[in-house]
Image 1 (cartoon, rainbow, N blue to C red):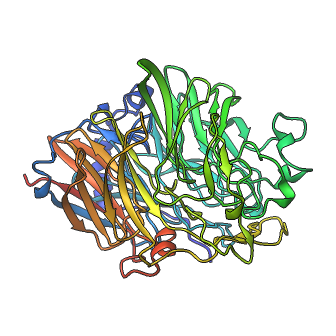
Image 2: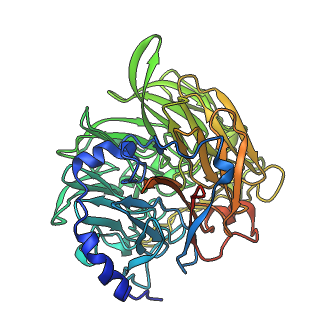
Image 3: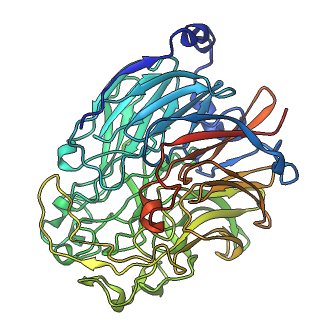
Length: 559
């Protein structure tokens, strides 16, 4: 099947609005650096470079959120999951849907301005759904990565394609689903490839021309540091995807990016060793792409725990001293705190209820494996916890509030009888060598919770328990409200201090998207994307709200 590539505009509406759009200010580096400090915008996937998914807006509070009502809704008409974080700039909202559809609309009314459909080949390689997690914005351009491993730049006022570059050959198993990150004059993007044995990378491209400035391979080649952690030449098909959006510290001038699972996923016999730099956090020099340090959470991963979960740059006091830290609730069930200056392990705590694959962490943060819970041929007799989807998952995101100093983490509680399979590599074909096996799904053993965690101690302050595993993103605000959504289709608002549910709204589909907020003409809006599929269906079976067409619902207080 081939998806047509057509650039469409909405006729007279675009003609009327074009002069207004043309005079809008460009999105400068200074604006990006301020992030959500300017509440009129939401300019990047994580809200700010530190990935907090936090807004200082406080028109909507714990006291009045119960009055929140739908201001407008936009139906994409596209089936499949909607995992994107909308981008809002100068009164325009940009939303991506599955199969690389991009919509621009008026952020106040929802009126469509233009639509772009990327022409996908009929033989794309996608392991885990046709999702796209959003665009990046800089100047007068928006940037979108594609399922056939391209990066495109569009005029943000008209949707006209300005350049289109192939990052690598999709027929080898490369694809891209992440929202890019703009740093200085570069668009930073990683690839998905871990289920196909393609060697992963993180790229930087010139924002104006699309010229590649550097590439950082996530799996080392012969003669490079770390290749000794791969038996024989297994590094050639080592995986190491980088499909979650990273973070940037402007003061230190360092990019941080997560790297996922090695290939093949569930059988590590042919790739003995730690398999660097998979399942790791990398600190990169933005000028060169060179690695400054790494921390590996799951050496020699045979559980498909991946490492592509969101992380946060948080300044803390530890033992009375200020420390600049990187905090990650990892898919493997541990919450890690690292010194982001050098990657040194500071703390690790279990944040899931059920964790048995490791009995603990050593003083350097290395897991102490329990051999009983290593995947076996035909599947393990006992369930391995957490299952391969987490924990939490890079497909949705936690949030951090500097007001409460808490992380708000959507958690999956589900285990699996993971299966070790035969190793047989064929370029461009799935290279799993096993699978997740039977999972706790649709039973009392599979549930979810949104947990408020203190990153300084790892302790849980409160939790909201849900009937189904959580697979939707979160948003924290200065109004003392945390927004999220569940697999029954409800957008939810919770008290940031207590976890009490303050408000809910039925969106009509499982919530997988990343909520954002913005303020225009004196009114605060909250946008929540809905549209299930993928992880949601795998975890909860086929709930009635799992897989209709996706939509964006935008809420506001009554005028």
